[in-house]
Image 1 (cartoon, rainbow, N blue to C red):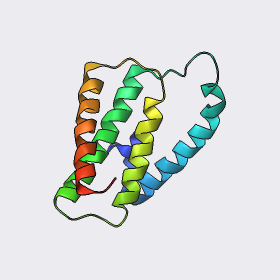
Image 2 (cartoon, rainbow, N blue to C red):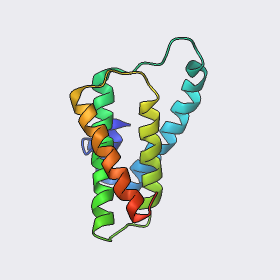
Image 3 (cartoon, helix red, strand yellow):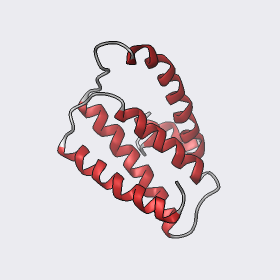
Length: 124
């Protein structure tokens, strides 16, 4: 999912941005379904800090692209849907136990400011 969200995916040349986001949303639905039984287990689900950080950095880039669209009043047709998908992805990664690195703390702090700005604009 991180590769789909980042600009590092080499096969993305022939795939539209909206298609990549849609695929990530579908993949997330599968992962939620697969991981659900494990969420009720006594030991919490854990994600490696480097994976957590890479995924969160990719999400941060996507949120910043949406923020730029919103501030320039050039909101694309699927932007609101993408905002919902990115928010669900953020909720998904936060559901795992992980060590918060200084970079993650910085990004999560910026997310709170970003969501506040989104709320002021009325997109949430």
